[in-house]
Image (tube, rainbow over all chains, first blue to last red; front, side, top):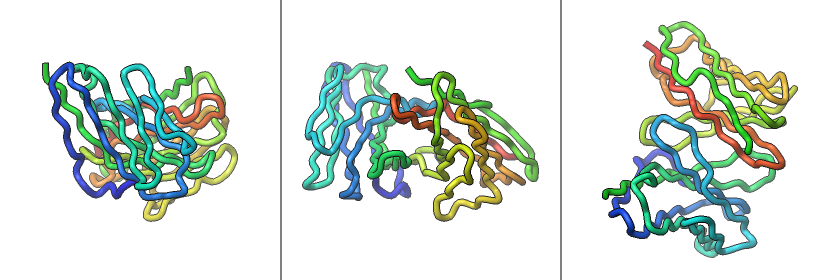
Length: 112
Length: 114
């Protein structure tokens, strides 16, 4: 993930809109990626993951896209709801059993 | 699914005292646990990797004598912040790794040193 020295960027959307949250990763050897949702004062909550042998994976209302060429990961949330408001982090891992490294995160604000 | 319990959720301590944070995997055994630190509006920063029965591996810049990690069993890792100072105030989060459930995170501990 990127340096953690910068403040989190923000994304504001209206309820019902689709949201796209982006993440750039730095380690080309990373082969496992996870998106997490973190609400204020809580630990990260798993949303969806993807391995490097895939470029797209879909879950319920969420889709993760992986572009290894440019080392870019995105999370798409369909029909965004107020309950989706949180900070979203991408995390990467380049060796099984080792720690996840987190990207800098994006604050999603959903207004109704 | 896998559950990781982290305790306490909040703690306030005086400067110079030590604080212990517990991280327990409730329904699975975790050979590896990880400790992260998070400042307000920032990302999670890995502090150390804890393996059961062996010494923790600390990330560069993390003082191992200040942040003592013990992983004495497959279900419990502890982080002790020794001689805490106000700059140690932060949100500390643990994560446990299991082959079946992957990475599971605790709910975090808000440490305030006054």
